[in-house]
Each structure stands twice: as structure tokens, then as C-alpha cells.
Image 1 (tube, rainbow, N blue to C red):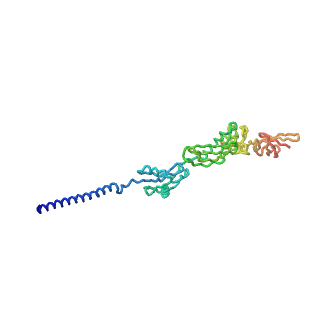
Image 2 (cartoon, rainbow, N blue to C red):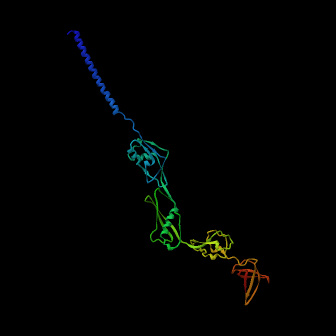
Amino acid sequence: MNADARAGIIRRHRCLALLGLVALLGGAIMVPTAAVATGAAGFGRPEPAEPILVGLRPESTIRGTGIRLGDVADIKGPDPALVERLRAIDIGRAPLPGLSRTLDLPYIKARLRQSQIDPAALTWDVPPSITVVTASQHLTGSDLVAVARQQVEVLRAPESGSVSIQPMVLPPDLTLPEGALELKARIRPGTELTGTVPVTVEAWVDGTQVRALSVALKVVPLVEVLVAARLIPRGTMLTPEDVRVDRRTLVPGVEPLREPAAVLGQRATRTITPGEPIMPTLLESPPLVRRGDTVILTVQGRGLMAVTQGEAREDGKAGQIIRVRNRTSGREVYGQVEGERSVRVSF
């Protein structure tokens, strides 16, 4: 084999070796490249997940005795289980019915940390102020009195007669939790149902008793008395049409007239308003003799009697002593009014 042939064989071996080396180097380079590509897809930084947003409301109305995060915030996020967990977190006691409570973000975050939730992992939307109000309903003192009065009426015997039932003091209005309201009244067994009667009124909401209050009632029998049927001006001579019978309570020491016949022939001493009880002091008998009237003057005594005319010097009612001038003698005497324009002088 000549030198040229040997040189060609050497060149071919070198070329083959070089190609093998290139192929070897090329394979080594390709493996790391594939590994990097695989790592970028499987082990590199993941795409950022959607955050959980907690939007606190400026004002919330709640029902119940506790406040949960879901009561005061709108919570949204990709993890339903975590969202529900956040909504259920207890963040404090609710205010009393009808009252309000103010919350702040640091306090709410502290409550989340107590529940093993990192507030920094959440996105917050916070208003300038956060106010919580407990839903409520209003119950007036008049409502309480009505329930207590009804209980007294139920327990009183029908034959015991009519009574007036009034509160000793009007109880205060109540603010109660919202819900189905039921009022219950009870009187201690054996309680006398006249005079001052204590009644316990209970307020139940959704089957739970929330308040109990004692209402003191004044129970007084009613009697029939005369009252003015219309406005009666002063000086009016009363007729049966001026009065009517009504049921009223009696005040100790005050006794209104009860029979319509008692007002006949009587005159009002002052103006009497409609519905006002007719007291004896409001009426008077009109004078049988008026000042200036010509009267029959009867003088009697020691078995003698004389009748003459006289002039009344003042008004006089039956039985009153008035001054009368004897028109025959001109003398003034004192006599007792016996009837209309009739005066008797005794000596």
C-alpha cells in the first residue's frame, strides 16, 4: 500500500472519529436542553393564582347574638371551601337590639389570626367605617298595658261588675330582637283583682323569652253618675236633656249626683263642660225672691198675724233670711223666704 493510500485511510478514520465526536457532543448538548425545557414546564415558578377578595361593607344589619365575617363582608375567591371558612369566622358579639357597633380592620385581622388565617394572604377592600346594627322591633308601653289589662279582664268574675283598669305608671317602651313576637301575661294565684294588681308581662321572640316586665294596674269599680251631655253655661236652669248617665270611678270624698231628678229646677253656678260629672257644688237653687221684687210679707207672732206688701232688698232662696222693706210703714225687717215672692217675719 503506497503512501497515498495510507494517507487516505488515515483521513477517513479521522473524519469518522470527528463525526463520532460531533455526534457525541451533539447528544450531550441536546439532553441538557431537553431537561431545561422540561424543568421550565414542570419545576419553574408557577403562574400566580387568583387572590381571595374580602370586601367589607360600610353598614350591616344582622340577626342573632354573634357577628361572623360573612355578616359584614362579601368574600370571593377560587377556593369555595376557604371562602366558606372565612365567612364562618366569629369576629365578636353583636350589639343589643336597636344599638350599633363599630369595627375596624386591625380588630378583624386579629380575629382571623386567632382562627389560623393569615390576613396578608387576602386582598382587602375597606370602607372608611364599618358599622354593625342588630335587627330589632319596637314594643310600646301601651302594648304592655293592653296585654296586662286583658289578663285581668279574663280572670275577673262576670258578676263582679264593671271596673276601670288603668296603669299606675305607664311602663317604658321596649326594643326587642326581630322575629315572631308573642306576649304572655300572668298574675300570681290568689291575687285580689281590685285595687293595685301587679301583672308580669313576658315578651317571647321565636319561642325564646327575651324580656319580662311587671306592670302595676289600678282596678277600681265603676258606678253610674250624671255628667253634662253638652256645654252648660253659667246660670242655666238644668233640664233632663242637659245631663246623661255614664260609668265613672269615684274619688274618695267626691260624690257626683246620680239621679236625673236631682238637677231639675237647679241652676249652674259656673260653666260645665261636656262629660264633666255633675257635682252638687256646681248647682244651686235659683232665688225665689229677687232684689226689688214686691213680696207678700207675713208678720206673725204672739197669736197675731198680719199680711202686707213689702219690697225685697236682696235676693233670697228658700229658707234664707233677707231684708224686706215694709211698704206700709217704710221700716226694714228681716224675714225668711218661704216661697216664690213670699217672706215671713216672726216676732
